[in-house]
Image (cartoon, rainbow, N blue to C red; front, side, top):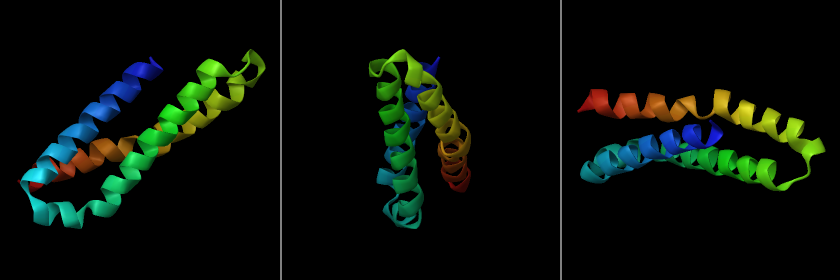
Length: 88
């Protein structure tokens, strides 16, 4: 389920990048938001790798961190995608 969430976030982020490549002026407006989304995906993946490779007694911590990123940062990707799609 976590991998599916990551895949969906990456798919949305790639769609954002494709739309912004087509409109360079919009890309400049949203550059900070795009960087924030990239950091969120990187953090989510980083914690997911830690969850898979670290010993079992640390899983509660990595799940907590994944949950935090997944509820606070990942929804911003969807919001940015809807913002970009509504402008065009």
